[in-house]
Length: 223
Image (tube, rainbow, N blue to C red; front, side):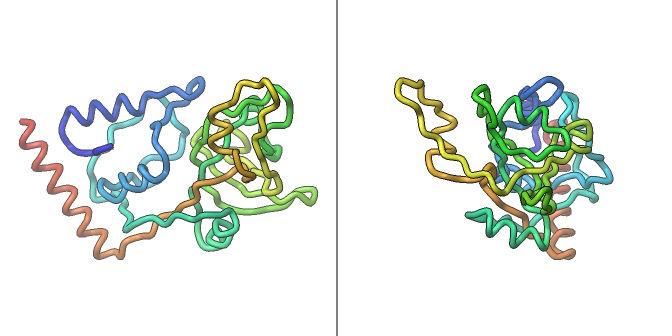
C-alpha cells in the first residue's frame, strides 16, 4: 500500500479506513507490518494529540505536524517466549485470534479462545501486549485493544498463555480455511509478534523535516 500526499491517495485512505469489522468498530484491513512501514515513512500522531477512543467511523485526517512520531525500523519475533522476554522492556505488537462469541463477551474474564461447539474463528486482530499476570494459577498476558474503553476491562483484555490450539477437521466436515491457515500446527492464541525501534532525537527531527517538505511540495502541486 503506497501512502502519500496527493488528494487521490487521501481518498483511498478513507476507503481503507471504512472497513466494518463489527458494529461501531472500523479498522484498516492491514497488518502490523504495514502499520510500522507507514509510521517509518509518514509518522504517526502522538497519543496526547489523539486520545485512545477505539476505532470509530469518522477519524480525523492525518495532518503532518512537528509533533508526529517516527520509528527507525521494526523487529519481528518468532515465538511467544521471545515476545515475553522483550515485553519486560516495552510493549509488543501481536495478532490475536478472535473467536466469537467468546471475544465480544469477555469483560474482565481471561480470554481462552473457543470454549464451546458454537465458537467461530473470525479473524486475527492486532493488539498491543503490555504486561503479564496470573489469576487462579493461570498465566495471562494483558493486551490493549483498539475497541475503546467500553470493551473488555477498560479497553484491555487478559489472554491466557496456557492455551494451545490445533485445528483437526472431523470426517465429512467442511474445512475452515482460516482455521487451517492459522492453526494447522499447534500454536497459542497470539502470533506475529513485533515491536518498533526508535530513532535518535536528532534523526527523528530530520525525518519530520523531510516529511513536512514533501507535504508542502504536494500541496503546492495540487493547487
